[in-house]
Length: 233
Image 1: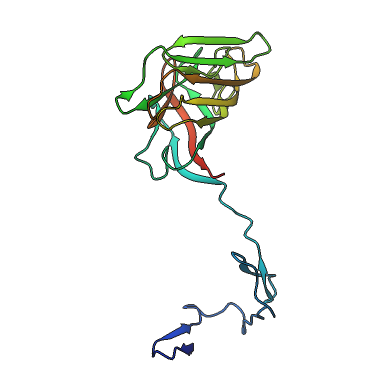
Image 2: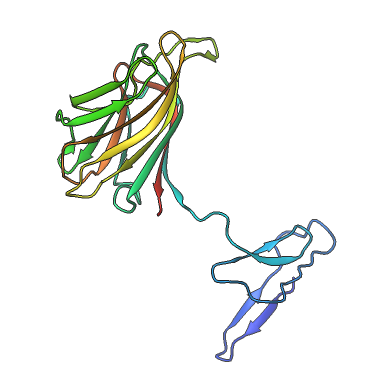
């Protein structure tokens, strides 16, 4: 196995080596570009051996920090600042969740924050929820509420008629700022009607937010996938 070795005047060298496994075709040839690219560009192939400079299409605007997948009854989903990059690196975070089904029918989707004293349960949460059947203005509660009509859990065999999915945008995690959320969920209500609820709200406390807990009013989370992202701006 041969290699191309470029020796520095100081004595050390940099080598280009062939792959460990034999090429899939008899010969593999790459043609380099005829000029240097711009700063932060990547070397890209056209699939025929011609290399050129290209701008990275993934600028990591949304950075995946943690994912929780639930396949059996679980009381809640919690993300805290023990996760690298969580709640102390970005100004905006997003939780994306889907195929989430509760173990109990006729439930609501709640969320609480954590601060240095632990789970924040004081009645200082306010959430405004919009729904075609009538809007909800939930104030003076011990949690965020993200739906107006109750969420169902009806199913038949492997067919799921009622579950919930959505996005929650979260900001103001720093000390001296009041935590805020906005987002939307879609779900099947207890009559299997399909509903869409935009929502937004905040908490009347100025301590630094160190985590969040998402949980159902009744029962547990039976299935679902929850992913936390940090948003670079």
